Length: 104
Length: 247
Image 1 (tube, chains in turn green, yellow):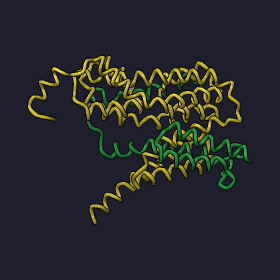
Image 2 (tube, helix red, strand yellow):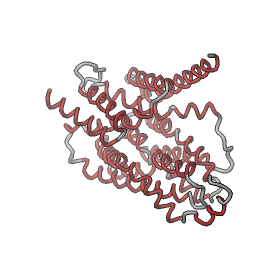
Image 3 (cartoon, chains in turn cyan, red):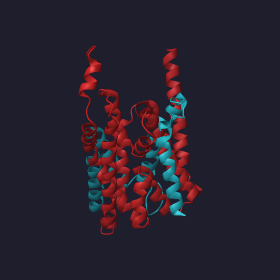
Image 4 (cartoon, rainbow over the protein chains, first blue to last red):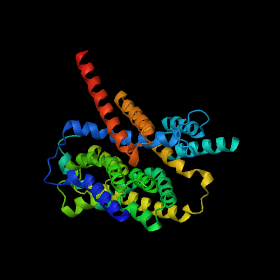
């Protein structure tokens, strides 16, 4: 089953990349679709980030106070805005998390 | 740009396929500082999620899209029904239609073999550098080799780092919380690109929906959050435009 899903999603992904290079399709996408698709990276990535930060892996409940991952994520956001570097952001976030876990 | 002799210049001095290819490789290389750690993390995470080494490695070749592979592994590990895993991955990857549309103008004249190959290599990172070459650089008969170069470097780095991650994955202790590198990577990607009010509204909606909807059956939170966020973002965008026209 897993192989079936891997190949099916792989074919779909390839289709999204190839579709407009296909000569039989019109060259223009409708404006509303372009606008809607332009939000996809932001909404999908935020939807992955926020629960991963806010939900405690042990209790599966939302944790705001006393949540080292939330502080590490806020540090990462500031570093990302300042440096715009992926490696620096990951490094700062992980270092913050390790420090807070070690200090606790 | 500089006058009438432009056409003749282009023909005389157009970069060769080799030059275009290596320019693509060069332009892509700074991005590899982000891609290789991400590939490592995916390799580690794939094994942690219970995929076997072959599945983890082949996922990098078949899907060839970091965020979607991470979601695939996470949802599969959580025992989510195949249909939801599939649709979540598809929602994430549908953004490629935009890249495809914007590349179409530059690539449509190529043979089917070229278009299939370049379509396969059309990822966020390769798109980002090669569209710059196509739109800002001087048009050349071999410019598609630029995308071949950027895409090939990205592909090779992604596969190699996934394999490295699979190999070292077993030896990394759980206490390192390495899986937290995934949300951190995504923070690094989106924090700098969020600008407009519509984008922020979309992100806030998606983040809240994803968190609130966690207990819903079949891990449907990702699909719900995506559609909710897009709807709100699109609406705010149009309200803003309407206001600007009125005022």
